[in-house]
Image 1 (spheres, rainbow, N blue to C red):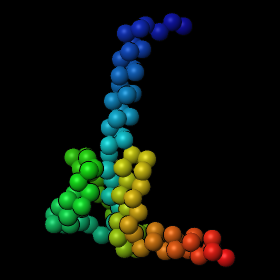
Image 2: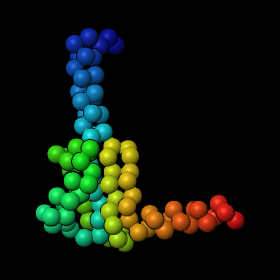
Image 3: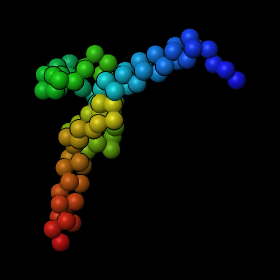
Length: 94
């Protein structure tokens, strides 16, 4: 089966655009909802991220703090993340 070059180019453009959007999507997980001041503070603290497409989600497994996902990268500022890092450090010392 032969695929037309025009269709192939349109598919490539569509997928490239979709990947670009997913890489810039910011998702913030927290135990509670954010108010406007907290959102503004997050945007100010992490001004290098693309906050135009930010998605805020409540996740009760986050004990305290926030987890920020940008594409495939994760910034874990939660208590659980800190405890996990400490546990891994102590495990490496033994």
